[in-house]
Length: 236
Ligand SMILES: [Zn+2]
Image (cartoon, rainbow, N blue to C red):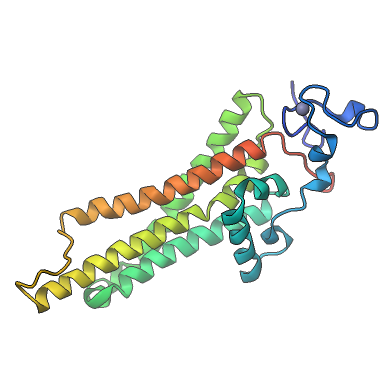
């Protein structure tokens, strides 16, 4: 059954509410109050009221406090959500590049020429993975008969992209730790410094990336569920 984007569905079960809007108070299929599916209930995240540092912070706080509530209130739109995705991917890549450039005693001297490449590769990789996610949840949503189109998928993944910052911060931490441990080791040879065996570093960097990816995926999953029949304003 094809559904138009403006059609009002029960956000719980997907029942078409357009036909009975004034005649009932609850969804005849699942009993969810109609008010819970009203398009105007999706007032949007702070970021969706305007991109900026403050709204970025407030959206993050809302995501940490209650991701489900945030996803239930997202306005379904692609423009600002895409900008949030690009912002977070750029930030994540900047944090990693910064950590390597400022990377303890060896960083700046040893690797200035790789900084730009590293930064761009970070953006490309995270952009690629996020893009796959957007198309992936659209695909799985469609297969389940949900409403998940590209706009909903972009709204969800844009707000889940804070998860990539977890990857970035952990990678920066592992890198810095390893750099400073090398110095400590040189200064105090024989002293029992908390050195990371260097063979472990690639593994720890991979693990750091993976943990952030799990956070991203968890938010995507919560958003995917909360927006599977999301209604949008006629003006969108
Ligand atoms: Zn229902």
